[in-house]
Length: 469
Image 1 (cartoon, helix red, strand yellow):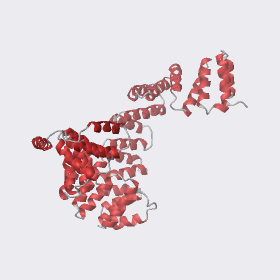
Image 2 (cartoon, one colour):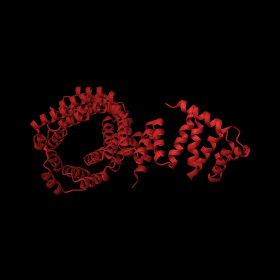
Image 3 (cartoon, one colour):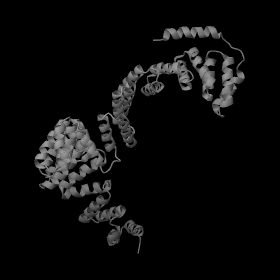
């Protein structure tokens, strides 16, 4: 039995010899073997079109779409076929081509024309759903909601109502979402999806007693009990949760222990929650609250800062870090966190301020010494930079520090010292073009200083003093 590849090759050879009918017969004879293959269906559809067998071509193109739903060629060919046979399908297919080309907004008028070109409500519904999704995709939330409201009058299930609520939630309009679900409850009072979502929204808006009426899941019922202060009842339900290895379980367990002021157990539960979602803002919010209740305001501010960092709200995070530093201005980790955030935000002056605070506590912090040296070099204050580079060079294991120090002293015309640092750099650095360049430079340097270092240093200090803010 010939392989599908051989059959396609035979059909192509016949087509090349303009034996189109024979090529088509070869393909139709192999239909059962090739009907799940996209390439085969495309070939047989094109062959049918060549012979003007439009019904057959339509059948094969439609089958191709079922197994290759993004086949542009299938949609383009069907669009031409439908243009003569079915205006509803023509406009729907034209919309699909636009969607595949990323022209979502331009597809919407075609969905409207498709709806206008059929009397069958089910077909209207199909096009309306696609149009609602297109509105949602391009950010026209209210237009999408209007379409789902129209659909809810013809499709008798809760799906449209749920979609309306979800869109309101996405638009940060929880009260409209609640109103939509309350209306849905009149027709679909037994739908657990509506009840659960409605209960969650009542919880989020503080209407706990209403939430209790509709809650379906055990975890939501536990949350409501905790909000009502019924901690023992909540704990009883927590004990009966079948799957205790979930982030939601540990969040609720942490909340229970927080209410009971069991701080160690609360922290353990938060840490277990963090194993699932290490950077979730709620983790840091919960830790902040625990620290606050224990009187640790430094820890509270630090965790609030981390919460805002997790939300990408850097300015607010910085405010919290500065409050933490105000509470404990000797905490090295907080100073380092502030520096890191300053560098992320491009706040070089503030970063330098905190590098120098760090050096006041930890004078041999090499990174702080080098960064301070770099800062003053960028400002052209070479004498101040030299002080930091010298201190870094005393403790460093990095050849780059010697290179920076050498360049700094060379700028100060202190060639003897610059040469010493360059030689240390050459001895320590791996071979590179930079090393060769420095070797060449050193060979031309004298062993004497070419300028008055004291006068230059004094001038630099004077200029540095007047350049301070």
